[in-house]
Image 1 (cartoon, rainbow, N blue to C red):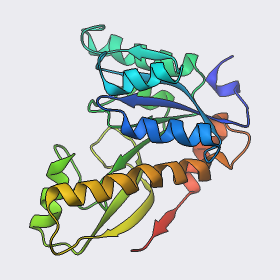
Image 2 (image 1 turned 90 degrees about the horizontal axis):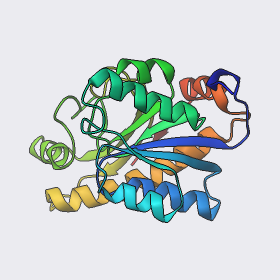
Image 3 (image 1 turned 90 degrees about the vertical axis):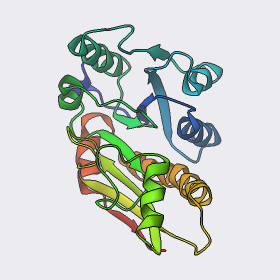
Length: 222
């Protein structure tokens, strides 16, 4: 059945991840605990030896390694990623520490249904090259008293898609990059699960989820 005709009541999530897979693990744990009414239907990684690959396999989630090694041509890689997500009837796609840009075919097929988390309050401290410790270094260097987590729709740019959810966190006077990163990452995983659960409350899923994402606005103050 094609993606446009799919209608079901359990949110079906496709995950793209590159490294350790801690965000993936948070989603898997929440699904299994019943705090997230959803199912991870496939995990795609550009790293066959990633922690995300191992976590998917431990939880019996279909895993696919798709990268420049498996598909040297960018167009072919884009097609393979898109086709895998469609074949597994993913309602939404979550970039869980995925360090590659998506191609135009995947962006078009899942327009408005691809989500990414960012460890700061966008539009501050976003853009190309702003990820991981670099973000927290910039927050501390700017003397910010508040940081947080943003969840946004993915488009062709870097951190430029519509923001659907944000939560604030304090920056402490004695924070280091490491302590700030730990606080933000812990909240980032939980906040993503909370946001996904809000989306899962819309039934049926399928194509209708795009409209739910478009209309959701979550803002949590410090």
